[in-house]
Amino acid sequence: MLTCLSLASTLIILMMLFVIFADLFIGGYKKITWEFLTQPPKQGAMGGGIFPAIFGTFVLVILMTLMVMPTGVLTAIYLHEYAPREAMLTKLIRASISNLAGIPSIIYGMFGLAFFVLFVGKKIDALIGAELLFGQPCLLWAAATLSILTLPVVITVTEEALSSIPEEARLASYALGATKWQTVWRVVVPKAMGGILTGAILAISRGAGEVAPLLFTGVAYYLPRLSISPSSQFMHLGYHIYVMATQSPDVEATLPLQYATALILLFLTFVLNLLAILIRARLKISRPKVV
Amino acid sequence: MVLIVLFILKEGLAVLFNPAVKSEASLRELFLKTVWQPISEPPKYSLVPLIVGTLKINFVSLLIALPLGMLSALFVSEKASDKLREFIKPTIELLAGIPSVVIGFFCLTKVASWLAHAYQYTWLQEMFTPTRLNALVGGIGISIAVVPITFTLCEEAIHNVPESYRIASMALGATRWQTALRVVIPTAAPGLLAATLLSFGRAWGETMIALMATGNAPILDWNIFHSVRTLSATVAAEIPETVVGSSHYHVLFFIGSILLIVSFVVNWLSQLAISSLQRKFAGE
Image (cartoon, chains in turn brown, green):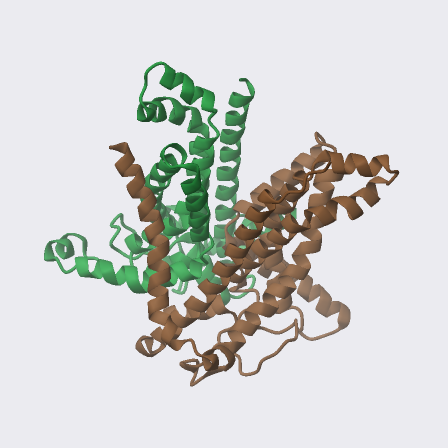
């Protein structure tokens, strides 16, 4: 009896995945043409393509990755290689990371608004004498907010990667006369590159999908020009879906667009996640043995 | 991380201490009155409909996600072969990777429509007066987001029970399922508790699905077929509309503080549960 119940539950969960994918695919595939992907929206975002949203999402994610990877990897290296195990500071850092991971994404948005936009931005504006340049929602702050959101992911995965390197590799390096610094940078980190890469991919996929932190830190629905300046607003795939679904004036007309945009976003995150899973699996199989 | 706490609390605490703000939104009004209408004159700031709405949705989603997650975890750990396990686990993790906007969108369009078919039965209409976007739809959406977390954590907890326990139990004559129910699950209980807490934490903070699929009307009742407004959706929807420094602004950050504090408490409790589990196994 229990077998039936538990098997049924598993099937239900798998079905959820399948149904969502199938529904989005059926609803959206007709709209996905080359034109759709490369044209900006027309007719008040009721026709045309979604290129600016794709572009905005990409730029945002790249900026975020540039911010999060150095910080995250360095923190992980510090925690794993240098920090004393039982020190108060170490425990505090680990507790902070685990708490950060559990904070609802909207709180990140509020923090991004209160801290980056209103506090840091205003200070920067005062310093450089500009009139409301950095003190408003823009790409830079949205990327910064997202980078804090994905920081725990990067740190955790990088630490996992570092732990998987056998101690013999480090000992061998010391035995050959290297300092700790040299060992870390020339032996440990190169070996951990696969794991670090996985962390980056997971961070990117999470960052591309999250919308709540962006709502007040930089995203907009219909921008007339495609701008790349970090101090301006940008369009974003997820936000586009949200606005179209909840606020568009003509739901019937935009429904195919909504489906197509959702499909693109889903496809993107799906591919990234799959990539991360595959890399992880391959690393487990082909871990080189240190003779 | 300290920065985050500092800034949000800073803005939120202004509600408690700033006298100008207090005249419009005192603690009493926040918790004892029952209407949320910040645009009215004078504005009404009760948090009660929002809290009830959030709890309604969390309840529905956990009601769906916890049994599904736990039973599946049981199946995958106990009954499934290793190869099957290697396939199912990553697949469910993929479900976790779906952006919540997309889940919200799916609920808003398809799930609400499916349920709307059911509302055609007049007895349902009379008893519950359902609206298209309601707590049930939102709850289902959040459960889709929460189920992978529940599953992964429960599966780990169950899988970490040492094989020796199972072997000993079966050596004493128990069947596989008796072993699962009476030996494995009680042993994994702290881990399952942590899974429950963390699932609740995820459901508690979920914003996008709540924004899109719940109808966003701060109605105060326990009927799951009515629209609701969660705490997080309120923050998301209203911050862009407020004046920085107004009492509305401070109340919204106060809501953020509540969200934050509850998340911390839930996290801390689940850490306790997990470390008690570790201690239990270390003693073997």
